[in-house]
Length: 79
Length: 459
Image (tube, rainbow over all chains, first blue to last red; front, side, top):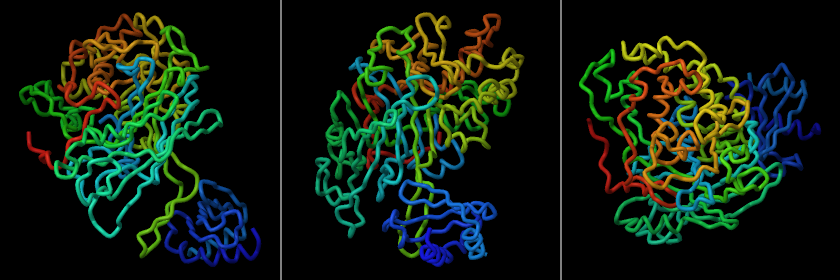
């Protein structure tokens, strides 16, 4: 994931994540920069922030991204 | 009930709640097998203004296991989409619905059928129309004709129907879940001791939404073989149905819009009737619904030592003495529910699929249908064409399973055991009402209309 898309991702995700801390952090975003996702919605699920793993879902696909820094950013945004 | 609202999570999601699954050699077309999976438990006939329908966001699957490993070799997938002609009215229909393409029907539903097998996927048909719900004489005056229009031949000898049907499963739900106070035996029940009484069918007049599929036997048998020999393992298939939803659901505020995303996740499963309902304990029912039959070894202990077998002697003091003393693992129930019955147990019959413990309806397709006086008690009623050889729409699965759990079938695996006298008599006091069924596809009867049905009454 590029820095640009990551920033966009975090920015768009923070508001939604704040209300969903019971699940860890479940963050919804409209994909804007990810060319694979096109205009389809993207859902990111941070089940365990300490693992650094983010489950990214679009369509019927799920990809697990390991990015401790991004995971920590999302977790902070959810506090 | 068979599997109506049987687990905590799925009880809150009726559109995905698989209530019954049937699989039988079609009595009027014995070169084919009919499989029916029902959803939406306990539909009240007066369902307006938003009448019942399948979920556009649910994936409905019927699975066939040809090899006995508890995994699907063939899956028939049904996916729905709803089309609203006029969103500016609150009405389901704006006039009489005299055909399934009537412009007066405002909220039509269509579906596709896809066949998947070992990585190959073929769309068999798409844009197939469902019938409307049965509303009443002003809106759906000839409902039978509407339903007939919704029976589709989709090539390859296959026939499908998806839509509202009269509930075929019968059970005295009120009695069974009132501490198993079976009305015909309530004079013996520890809590009530009331006079014996006939059973009361809790599902009477309710409807379900059925997905019915009729396919040639050779399409289901391993290697495209036409099953003719009941002793041949290839004659036996395992059948179950599932419903799946997307992994993630996001409700967008102030829009009325939800976004569902991610892989499909199984939320409901049904093979043998009542398995998750009365065998699996409450704390494991939701996880059971999420698993394939191949994982059912995790639930073996609950089949070997069913909770209800321990309760019957307590609830009916002095009636089930032999059952109370039966502490051995119930190999009879394991065979009936998890592996099938091997040859040599019931003369002329087997539906054994191997050592893998898997809750599946096991149908020996080489057993011909019983067309004259079939017994609703199936195999224990000496009718080899009925449950647990698959399941027909009229089979009395509640009585069969009550009697099996009460010990009536244990002599199949241990000839030294003598069942209690009550084991071969126990019942919830109901039987099939022939007016509820059809003699041809889709076999489940016409749903009651809301206009013509009175609400529930006290007994």
